[in-house]
Image (cartoon, rainbow, N blue to C red; front, side):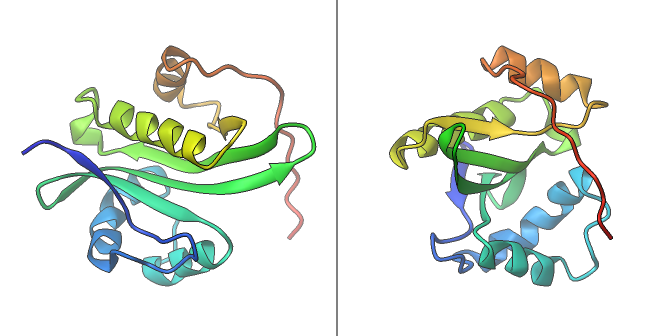
Length: 148
């Protein structure tokens, strides 16, 4: 069966495909192992604040997950920002990440975005190779301060 990309959420933040959300959890946790035990509850909060999810599926199995949102800002205009992009560890280099990345680019064009952007931890060298290969570049530093 040919892998395909499915949107798990609707534009209003509702979960259009709850079964796929549940199936996405194991892959998503490979990138974000500290997500709370109530995965669906946490994701509902993210979706309520503009987050959306798309998954690459092969049959009944999730191969890759993207969590993304639209952001308007003064320095880039309209951006499709990718919070999380992860391919199942056991399925890397099989084209699933590329399929999802291409889908995100197409979605950005459909939504009249000026930019597709994401942040990636400095330790993720393999992911960086992929992003550079896909034509992404590093335009700036990202500074952060925990305020808790």
